Image (cartoon, rainbow, N blue to C red; front, side, top):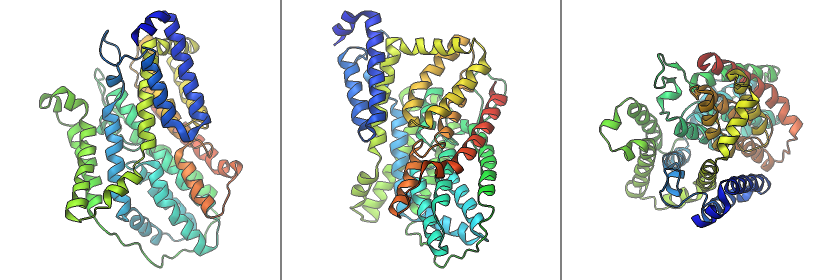
Length: 453
């Protein structure tokens, strides 16, 4: 396979990689249902062309090193534990409690949205929307109201808070892998060589959430109907709640310990993934051996998001092939020249370009592609990459809220509404999403720059 790359030469390999990457991206955008197949198929072509070697040699990326197994294990393990958490009915019970404390519809929407945001900081955005949105639909039915504004608010808030912690969203997990960040680094981050810790993305997100919630208050200021909850959801099992809390607590504790002095390097590099997968396996053993629930394996198999997992595996290989070809170096150089070497200009371009792209494109492949580009830009400018990393995540994650198709949580929320007989037009969605998103992005844009410039 390497002889094909040798025959093409450096220039041929570069253009072959760029063309294959472009076809992959167009294919993923055009045939969204087949993204995993397209990404993995493209990865195979990168290997067959010899652009991405199967085994070592030359110190560059290989098939095995291209895939960030720590990220894959964090995603799979967290998804598994979240499946147990949802099955236990605990999220619905927590939402019931908030509704019971709401004096009217406006506050019910605000509390449900903020609640969805809090859950989404630790649970996948789509799963959060699927948990909370049906509650809003039920409230609307009881009060003879349209559920559309409520569900939109829940979906966009879920997406906003996904970037708050390491396990909140796939893009956060990708950033953690690229920047070497642990769970605590999303709260207070002190990179090597920095004199002081800076405000983490968690706090940036909370301030963005606060500002964006004020937009929701304005939108729903006239919705003052009283609300009463007649029946509360019963929690079927508290063990999944313990598993989720234990996962988060262990990630926090381990991030503060010098694990590299105790464990081999390969364990340290995959510590977060091992923790997440470990608690997922504990949950499987609990359901299978203690509760004698043999159907749990089938439930996990049906609910596990293989779509995202295999899309990422393919993308890791494709992006690594792009890096190996030298294309990422050229793209990074183009960005650096575009800003004329001015870091603020480049930061601004990355944030708002990410907002625009993520309004129409799934942010997972975009972030996976741009992270190595940002690293190259930072290297060429001789600066620490964190301000650009955080700007990228801010723009790409929050920007997805602009349109109905910009984030998976939005698509999931509109799917629930469609089942209820409500077809939501883009204009209806954007009346809420545009002011909400621009407010949140502007807060994040300013805070990240002021903290990490």
